[in-house]
Length: 302
Image (cartoon, rainbow, N blue to C red):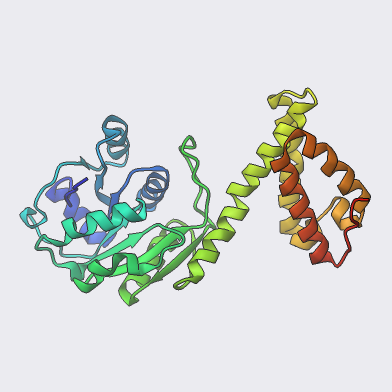
């Protein structure tokens, strides 16, 4: 997958240049689209959207919606009609192997990389993923939005969202600028700490959805439809999140583990084991972890 850096027109280029708010998007997936929309809404100008060509029609429509051209074919960066006069931020919202594969193709072109900052959106990876760009003189940074991006959700709010950033001096400045532009809050997370940082995001988002999926299965097993089950589950989940914000996470804890009711937990584990041993294991391990956290002793089944 090769891509070229380009601008929609000389007029658009200089219009954006005057603001100093130019960016290009590599990878119009869920994360990339959300970032691009937010940046354009903040007054930034997109110099080009670059995709793999697998979803050309869809991606081209998206590029058109933010007044940007869409590119997939390999072209010469050095063949630009005009050179960079103001800083450009390249946002690489693609997976790590794709970044590694694309990097040499970008760097083989004669471009003033000192005028460019390259940001990737990976949570667990630090800025060393972009080391080649840094050696060429570019600002480099990790700039990960601590947010969930469902593929089927066209609008994702970034206001108030934390952005885990890491980079060289120039890259960090660009990452902070981007985060502030969309209403986010940058947080410096370095090196291997990013793995734990990203694990926290997974626990807070993906595993919460996994817990809801398990609860759906449990209710379905007693004859409750998915629509009716969601009507029961979502209010209690939303109230738990609201309580965590207002009372603190410990104040939002409820249920048999908080009360120290080990007999109730063990009874439920028996029923869950019959239904789905995997769900029972999650329930048991989580309850035991809560017991340790709260200083209770979990009775053993006799």
